[in-house]
Image (cartoon, rainbow, N blue to C red):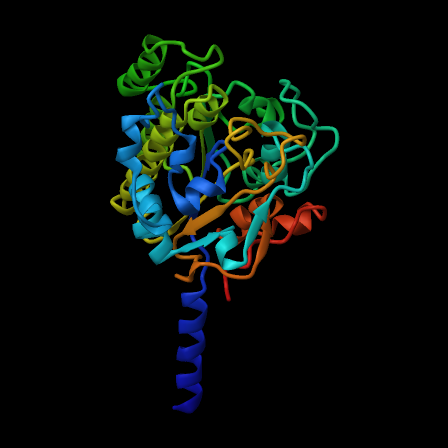
Length: 353
């Protein structure tokens, strides 16, 4: 009887710590930790000649940082923060940062996806990534072949993932759905073409999300990556109002993606979602629009996660984590060991206390 009881207890312990079957990684390009943890800052809104602040500021107002961040990103703070974990809040003694020393996009995504910074990746040019990303590696693992997919409007994404070598399909530019096979998928691509080509490299975020969700419905990927990029573009243009709107829209997309996963039998209760950013931005009104190694504080980021592989520990305290830990974490939450295959990769995030 005792041995049987021990066996049952051990089985329960293993089951409680079992990895997820699927993982979704989503990045919100250039979203600062300042807005993530404190919401909108009225000092960044424009004022007219009479000193009257931009009326849109009221939309994101609040008397405390907690209230403002919940207004800006309600899903993150009402769901992820309660059911999962968030890293990088300086007010809690925590830091999240990139290690590449350059503090802009391609170096950040390479670090995130391959597990280590690489001095060869020193521009945003469309150079095929010499490093094997966790997506490429998982795409070759048993049970994951053909079940790894990526979506993002930025036309450098196929180079970052090195689609020619990795064979990971990437929807990007003005063709969010690669090789569309259904009327719905063709309509999504048509929508991307019909929207204003405000940025010459690709479409807005919405068609990217629609494409990813359509592939979730039709192809059931086990590893899914979605790049959201509008906020970074609006920030570079100095539009704090539209930067905040993009952050709020990204939060709605996160909620929609999570709700879809939890309402789909193949994903319900078996999928971990990780959300982060590729770099930070300047910490003052004079440089918040920019990033790069000459912009102080642009190395600081944040990471959020929710799902069966993520105990509900909320905002983590007194920890330092890095973007380079994302790759091994993506693999670890689905029961795979990326570090053994890529010894330079950083260890997974400390998801257990």
